[in-house]
Amino acid sequence: MWDSAQAQFAAALLDTSLAAPSSLICEKGAIGDRFDVYRNSVIGGLVRALATRFPAVERLVGEAFFAAMAREFVLRRPPTSAALLEYGEDFPDFVASFPPAKELPYLSDVARLEDARVRAYHAADVEPLSPQSLALVSPDRLAELTFDIHPSAFVLRSDHPMVTIWSMNAGEAEAGTLDHWAAEDALVTRPRLRVETRRLAPGGAIFLRRLAAGAEFGEAVSAATAEQPAFDLAAALVEALASGFFTAFRGDT
Amino acid sequence: MDEIASTFSSLLPARAGVGFKPAHFDAILADPSSIGFFEIHAENYMGAGGPPHRSLGRLRQDHPLSIHGVGLSIGSSEPIDKRQLERLRGLCDRYEPASVSEHLAWSTYGGVYFNDLLPLPYDRDTLKRVIEKVDAVQSFLGRQILLENPATYLSFAQSEISEPEFLDEIAVRSGCGLLLDVENIYVTATNKGFDAAEQLSRFAFAHVREIHLAGHFETRDAAGERFLLDAHCAPVVEAVWALYEQTLSRTGPVATLIEWDNETPEWAALSHEAQRAQSALDGVSRRAA
Image 1 (cartoon, rainbow over the protein chains, first blue to last red):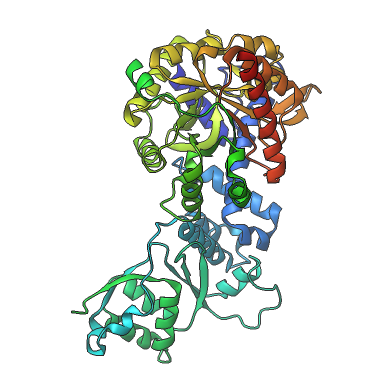
Image 2: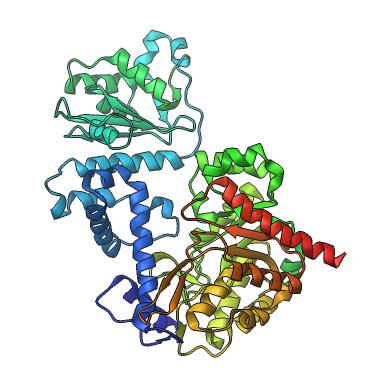
């Protein structure tokens, strides 16, 4: 029956210790070699899909290390849907727990940033809130505003210089020696066609995350100031508006 | 089933088309009339928005579109994934393609998507299931689909029907059309030691609504024999062009796609391949006239 033959075929694809299924024959060549063509195509194709999604991670660890790490991931967590655009969303978690990558504690954060950029790339298209529109809100209503957030927006936090390391390995900045080794937060958005990546100033991440969670403007400002007394609200707001973080606001009337 | 086939058949023009690559977008816009149609892999456009949809929407203004799926897993013993089918229908609603096609293959089993076109046994039991699935897909989409012959590297001991007969019966009983991949015939025949022209001659030409041509990666197996990988990474070889001429002599002019998905070529190289297919199509049209 096809059910059992297919179950055997599927199991042997991702378990390289298994022999080619007994239901198979080949007119020429060795059956094991022929089955390996499918096995290599499946595993190799998925490894390549991950390399495409995480190019800076690949650059940081080198092609051979990346291929070995991605192969482990593919064998343990193969895709569950044909929408391959989503494959690898849990790769950063895998990287964080992959023992051979322990010496690079920032690697999983760089992976998270790359993953966010891919998600932003494919997110729904929505016109961002015009930077001028907030200027019309009367200052005494500002604290009570809540916002709709752009579907392409992601706020990421890292204990490492995630954005700087990513940009040096993604061709966005010249590679060189890091002048600091501080925590960095990132904002990823795609207001129109280009995915944008910003390094957030201190307090910016908590401010935007609170707003994204539905908090009122005043409450988000308080949270940011509590975490970072030097939080610069005006600069954070300009940055958020320029990035296309918001799509709408409510509570002004 | 036949109603679907007759009410909404493939409307691809009998011209040469190419697989759309974003890298070629500007070159295509600069010379929009040179290509008869474009084909995309459905799964690459299953995101909600972004540049892929922007480009495709623009392309669709000037060209007929063929949506070619690799993820429905029609050859699987399991039911079709409803979510995947809904996503495909969403794409069809959005882009109103002239043609929708899939493969006689499987890619999903037990909740795992293998991202490859895997082989199935050609026996009565499997045939019945494939026909039911094609029928279900056509009913869900409300249109005819085309089913493509696969490139295979091995066979199942339980197979009892030849591939051409298997495809013919699917087409007759489900009302689907066939997508004849000439390269796949060549790859499979070479790897299995068959005569490609003879294999091709038994294809159910009456159901062919689209033709695929592609290049492969050639290597040697452990015994030192020629072995071909259906890699879509190179120009079409002369032997496949000859099989294409043989095909056209049986089908007449049929929409023909150059598939070059990997090692993306310069637009000029891809366009050159398309022009060669177009010349062959023009030759058949002239002879018929």
